[in-house]
Length: 283
Image (tube, rainbow, N blue to C red):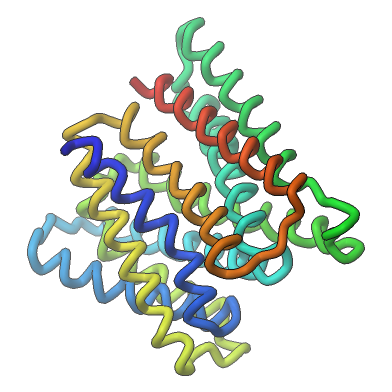
């Protein structure tokens, strides 16, 4: 039962981009819609849990949310260029590598020979996995420069997600306390980043559902951490890329050649394998 609980974040998060694309709209209205749903969910959670909120938690949580908005809007912009199946695997790989390297530098996470070896192998697996999932095929090639533009946008997205995660850890703020101030920051950040594009429309309302999914995944992750530990819950939460990747191909009709499907499958396995090894370094 505990393992099932730890898998629920992956199920929720793995469906976010699928739901966003199905709900329609562009990256800007999708981002604002997600934050509306996330803010609603966070408000309900705060009413029931009522964690103590110090000034540090409020400010740091808010800033964390601002950077999440930067990460999310650029991830959704990449989806418009590369599609869900390619974007989600590359994005996940970039985030895993970035947070791991920063964790080693800032928090000195890998202090033993074993963790250094495991972590290095994990990063190599993830990098190879990202390369595999981004391979083009002559029959289904991206327009010239499209992949490069998508990767540059994902670098900005990864930076946003990195700060979103790291700043909370830097100030040692627990997830329950951060939920509401983060959600407020997410909403404000989304509005600021998208205001020129008139994001408030019917698609923003529809995409509130994806925000509820994000909040649900966050809740289950917080519930599973004390039950199964970081070493198990972290890699399991990353398996959502399987849902996003193959869900996009099956339910969104993204076109892939047989060769691309094989490499996407191999890349996904390598990225998840890398996540498992990273989880072992956190044990």
